[in-house]
Every structure is written in structure tokens, then in C-alpha cells.
Amino acid sequence: MKILGMALSSLLVASISGGALAQTSPPLTEQNLERGLVNLGLMAGHAFQCMPEADRPAAQGALLAFNSLLIAQMGSNAAFRFATSFGAGSSHEVDRSYCERSLADWRRHVQQHRLDR
Image (cartoon, rainbow, N blue to C red; front, side, top):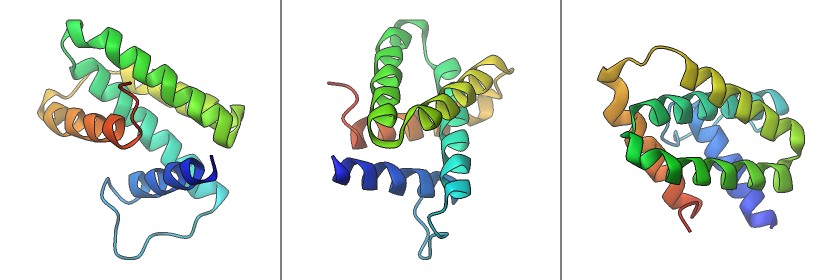
């Protein structure tokens, strides 16, 4: 379980630095983790809007699985932060020019955390 928590932390730090792990990552602080959760939630919400309607039920399952991981590893405040950011990201008008990137980022996130099982 601790390994999963470290993986989640790495993912959140990566989302702070723009998606790819930078050579020097920012220090792991509570503020950076919160910012990472917000960025990740916004990205997931944007990707969800870009998905074809037929793909959305599977994505909802993956989102619930990830939120469960957050609750187990980082607590309900972290899960709430991610969920509210997802809601914000999925409620704004979508800029379709970024859909390909958002979908690729989402697919990578699902594969890294095995959320499609």
C-alpha cells in the first residue's frame, strides 16, 4: 500500500510540472499535492468531456476506482479535492484542440494505476 501512495505522490508531482516528470521535481509538500490533485482532476474532467459517449461508463468506473485509491492512501480530503476538480473540469466548455492530449494523459493515468481492471 505504501508503494501505491508513493506512486500517487509521484503522479501528483508530475501533474504539477506539466504532465511529464521534470529532471528536478518540486518538493513534496501538502500545497504541491493539493495543486497536483486539482490539476489531475481538471485534466480528467476535460478528458471525460472529450470522450465519445460510449466510452464514458468505463471512464466513470476508473474515476471511482481512483477516488477509492485516494481515500485509502491519502484520505477523504484528497479524494474530495480531486472529485471537485473533476466536476469543475467536466462542467466548463471544452476546448477541442486539447482533446487529443487530455485523452492521452487520461489513458496513461488509467494504465499506470491499473484502473481499467
